[in-house]
Amino acid sequence: MDQGQLDANLKGIRQLLSHLHGEVTALESSYSQVLQVLRKLEGDAIHDDLSGLFRRKPFFEKWEELLAECGKLNENAGMLLIDIDHFKAINDTHGHQTGDEVIQRVAALVKQYESPRCFTGRYGGEEFAVAVKGTDAEILGLAEMLRRGVERLYGAVPGTDGKVQWKCTVSIGMSSTAKEGYDSERLVKAADEALYDAKRRGRNQVRSAA
Image (cartoon, rainbow, N blue to C red; front, side):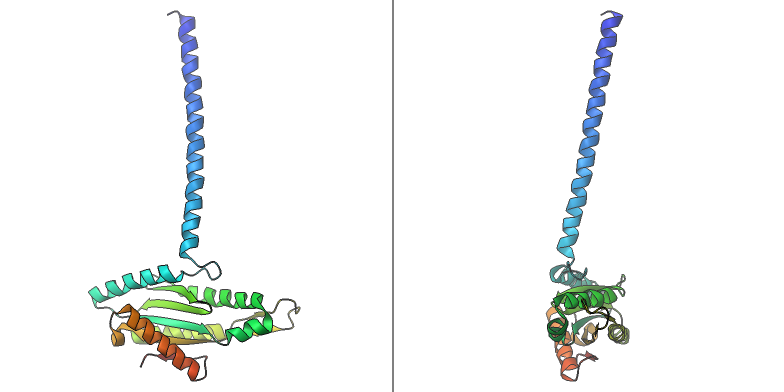
């Protein structure tokens, strides 16, 4: 093989390698884009669109894990169920756009308290759930901070030029493993009964399971 033919072969190999490099780069870029889409879809499946909090199913999956961990370590944990008071009246009076804003604002406030010891979810409709490690006093303290925080929320009703503003309050029911043990259904039922008691007693308050 003479030098000219060798140079031609080397040139062909370089062109092929350059082409292959371009194809690999394109594949890597496509793979990266696919991963981004999959991660977004996974996030959308885990988190509620409106509130940004955990959806009900992933929330309770984490709740079961938390209870199992606390049971092994003999640590206390609690459940808070939060309901926006008179939410139907907010929707009927100010419209669903305002209702959505109220849910988003309450959810944003609740989410501020997330930590390695606390996570939150949308229980359904205008209800939220908070799972937290801590003593009963700490859990009740958190509930009261949430109640007072929501009480300070307000916003302008769309289409009123800021002349009409919404405000809202929440009722909160609390249960804990100290009283109910580590049974998930029992804890949720106890928190729900405490929430009902808070609403029956006039709303805008925190009640713990009896």
